[in-house]
Image 1 (cartoon, rainbow, N blue to C red):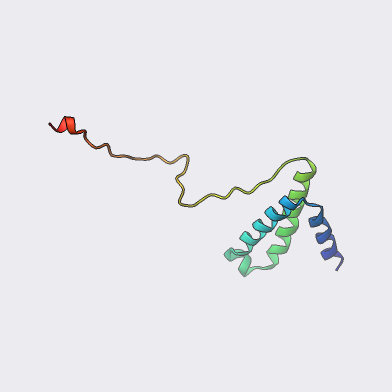
Image 2 (tube, one colour; image 1 turned 90 degrees about the vertical axis):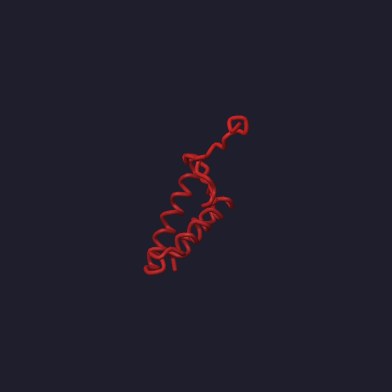
Length: 91
């Protein structure tokens, strides 16, 4: 009971934005195969992530989640384009 109270107290110290980011991360990890097969891992992960977010917040570091579309082109991707011959060259 004491441990649950301490966890709740630490989460309340986080800013609202950090609480949302933490919750999003935890939900994403809990959906993975490893965490479904070993649910006890989630508790340790929650404690560790909470301490990381709290430490960063105390140091003035902003942690944000970037969401990327998996189908979006990568910045490092090489785009291959075929150039059509101009009509002038065909003549």
